[in-house]
Image (cartoon, rainbow, N blue to C red; front, side, top):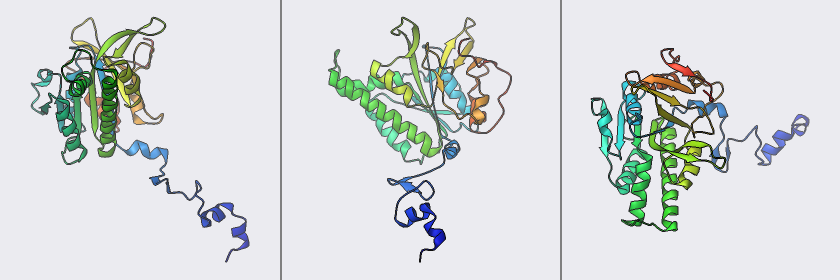
Length: 284
């Protein structure tokens, strides 16, 4: 029986008639409806470090193994640069020499029975080369449709790894080389060393991109997350997240790598230390 108070409640009438409303909906189209604040509790993170050869991408990523929030650590060596962290007894690695090997490895990691907290894919530029080699073979001039197939495959694979990070609460790191490119206005930009189509799509998939600059002192680096017309750097984070403590630019020495501290802040709720020279300005 419907009461007078029921008749005055349109939300109840809609619920009884099977109409979904913001008040009563738990699923929509088979997808669970959640509060946006719940996204901060997933624990997954997807990082990209890019820079010139020898800038320390592998070294920075490997330092995650020095933090309990980043260890056990697995390095996927595609470009043959594992020597940079070969002194670290707490790092394990696999050597990938074909795209089929990487595809199979990804499928195994997706099963979530591995125990690793951090996996670094080093690097994306070489992975794209392996992919086009697997598609087109040993040819100097792949067809346009083969380049298109490569782009779709790499974009799919990057999204697959992003979903692994989110579903398993892992730290996933992709390394890539950089390349100097001029935009339509003639501004020199530090781009990802990828094909134009991949450069266009990749930054929209990952959550954080940091460019590593080598300073005049060969032992000093700057990790730059600052959004700028001169780079594709970014640091996607909630306005009230603990990670807002982390500055856009971090200058560090090779004996004082910042990734363990970054993980302690992002995933452990810690306080950002004051031992680094930092800047929050994108223009400095």
